Image 1: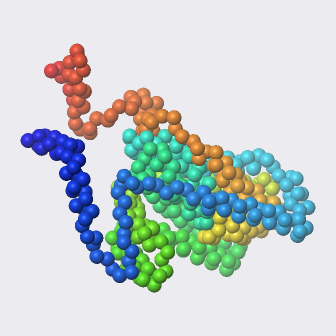
Image 2: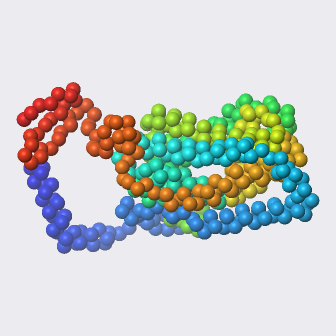
Image 3: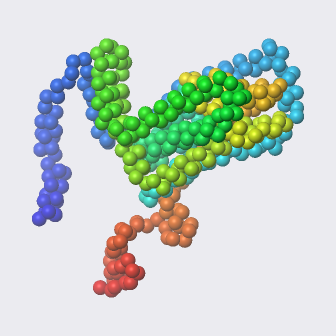
Length: 436
């Protein structure tokens, strides 16, 4: 009877177009729900109409122009300040093997970022996203993140790349939100460990200026706590956010109400559900965190290679700690590439170590950690996997465990359908076969 009812319902849905159109018009005729005064009507888009936000290419272009102007101003400052001779002499004795090591660290940073996405995609055995797709995702985050203030362009660009690889907007958002919060957690955790290990050295070497870094660290920690509140208490965030939005809109302070309303009532729920699904798999979250911490370690050790390139011996752990502090300061500055924060942080922590080579050392560090990965990522944004086989099935096939067929239910019976001229087989879990 259930099958008959389902088939009749299917026929009515396909053949009863006139009744469906009447029902649709009747649905449209209903009066909208009342809303508070001063609150615009809320638009509800269906999941079929949901589209990912395109990367803000105009904002990235403006960021690139801004970075270009900053670089030109920096070169002009060298000429007019009379430091160009010291700059050239500092480069004369640079050891290239150490610079090659710094470039290798940046390449490993990129590969580990891609591997963090692979870890998330591997768990979905039927995901259509391939390794080259994920390289494009990581490259897109580097490019648009480095050219937008506080790396705001990274998140939407990476979600867009995941949808191009075949994921739905919801699945792409879930993957990216989980990666985002684990990266932020890794940044704060790494900086916390370094501060605990080297706080006495920083205070003895730099004095009260270290208080600024402590404040920046506290700001990043509060940002991380806010993310966890959004993930674990979405209903509270939606109620508080909607109330604050209505209050601000009543005073005429909101220019795009629908955008903020969607962010509070839709994206908060997506962010929370995505994190909760991922948090249910503790080993995967721990592995992603380990990969992220290793990734950040390679980025923070670049100054150690730069110092050795100029013939300066330095403590490895001190360079890691100072590198994490420079990263915190640069990400707190609301300018493309952290301009201002990167220069100030590097001058504060590595300037005394480099001495007269500080200007050349900063330029080398900036080229290796910012300009090189930013513009090397541009051609990789167009990478795309040439097949639809999931990473899980490719790994299993390479390990000799079979290929891309459908997985059997756990603890159940795998049924192979009967072919023409052959007998049906039922394969039991114990491995025995029974002919019918």
